[in-house]
Length: 557
Image (tube, rainbow, N blue to C red; front, top):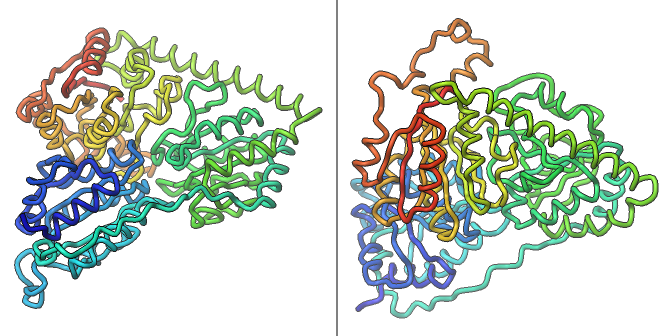
């Protein structure tokens, strides 16, 4: 069999540890699919449309900490994929997105399907390129994988013309190179300054983002939090992403509030904030005043220089890998927190431990007080899930008004923080499909996807992929028959008709969507439940099943 450019591409990807290629084919991708038919190292996962394909690859890449590779059709397919590419860009997911391109000998004619895809993809990628010669494939693939995987991680795009795909690659060597070690330590002088600022704080707190989890630095962050007895707060639910701190830790606080006045009030008691791996204060709707209280001093750790001092001046900026930086910071803090400072640390620990214990108990009481109401209240649904989730479960959330501001984290139900995934880009259709990719990366961990009814309709085709490959995911569709988050935002904006309770285009009640019927038509067993005991039983059954299942439950958010 002749070795073509696409045989070479698959060999290169295999050498970089790629196990799956996700995609949806078209005419301009047929040489790749022909090569896949003969390949035994990489498994192809077929999706019915580009939204599921890219989102599944996104979930796989986030969970596996490996590059996710996805192939879409030429311009029209890339257009379908752009929302999920935007999600990957906002999340910093290491994706290699490829698309077929027309034969270069035809491009001057502007043939059917042709277009300038590199320019279209460039704004939401770290690098975008059209491969012009088969001899350039090894360099292009090496650069793509390394660029995607090097902090700040993110998606890249390769356009693959048909003539390059079909060209002979018999004489082209693989030329594979190892990825560089990214564990760069910040300068010692800056680390010492940061340690002094934090050790002298009367009331420090820690703000944490997804990049701590992605850098495998959760334990190191917990060590610093324990040394300081500082409460830890994630980004607001609107941009939360991954979980980077154990939710059942005594110092684990709620996520930050949504709106800047509430954020400022929330942070007012603190004098020093340690900000780690976080896009500081991503706002959703404009408010005044600034979310940062004027008296608060900032120490910021990030591997992305763009994030340090981006919007808020810092007293100490530590540019380096979060895991390495936190390890060094903990070592320095150990020698500074003695005597009177140790006594102050002890008082802080006692205060925050009691405070967060009381908050969790209050949340649980609120849920219990609503147990008899029908339809089920969102908080009751989340509390049921908190009680039945296994310790090693992975949870993917795309139902903002039902998940109650990260209720599962706030109640301490996410025992392994690496298993929590939430939106960062907000192109809908991501959550249902991200969960499929997570389960492919973690076949040993049960996966629960909590999806709003509106969100589900953006990526429902992904259920077919879960059924085709028997990927065990429990999909919970929380159905309130409306775009509730938009109604809430309309009231925040104080729009006059919304304040009077009148909305246009925000209800999904006529006709009622049959999610159970849709799931069954795509090969996924499904049922609708309205009672707490039945919901708990079905979720437990689904998490132990060997294939996908969908559960729909009506809710009031």
